[in-house]
Length: 219
Ligand SMILES: Nc1ncnc2c1ncn2[C@@H]1O[C@H](COP(=O)(O)OP(=O)(O)O)[C@@H](O)[C@H]1O
Ligand SMILES: [Mg+2]
Image (cartoon, rainbow, N blue to C red; front, side, top):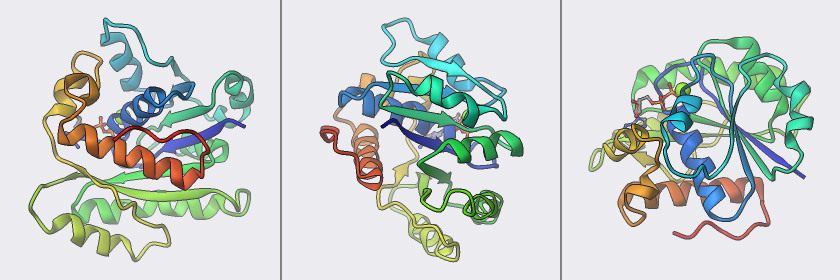
């Protein structure tokens, strides 16, 4: 059965595309047959893929439409995991992505503004729970500043929402933007650097949440 993971937040710039391409890469590196669906009309994941000169690890397909949940079954053939990189603001597309998903991952930056803005996606998930009682969801703190308490503070603040916060956080690291410029990921810059290890840990936690039976991503 194909597993579908959406990376959603109605707020822009929180790291949806960054985490979508990195989760897709981590899962592809562990042997899963992955498809990345770009549901943002801005097409950032498609741009990332077009900037790449080397062999793609997985296909990236653009579908910034509210018909994702209807079209997904035909796209799902031949793929074990589909990651959906969500759009900011567009409600009907986000709703459609939620309807298509087994799990929704919500990146939030360690700032009170992000905690407040997360209410929009929490409300959308709440609305969808009637139709999708088994849908899983989790926050992930992105751009945590190393050696500050703000990451923990934001996790505490997010506890007011009925959605768990993933244990693995991703720190603010320049390697994310540097690698993106060439359609690469942090793994291809250096698979042993902290950014790569954080991404592997997050991907493993994601697999655990999905209770996937596949082999784990190497740390
Ligand atoms: N952990 C991180 N460390 C450093 N820069 C990051 C990190 N996550 C995202 N960015 C940068 O922040 C910007 C917005 O990220 P992006 O993934 O495009 O967000 P979204 O898709 O939610 O709009 C990009 O320039 C990206 O390179
Ligand atoms: Mg994006």
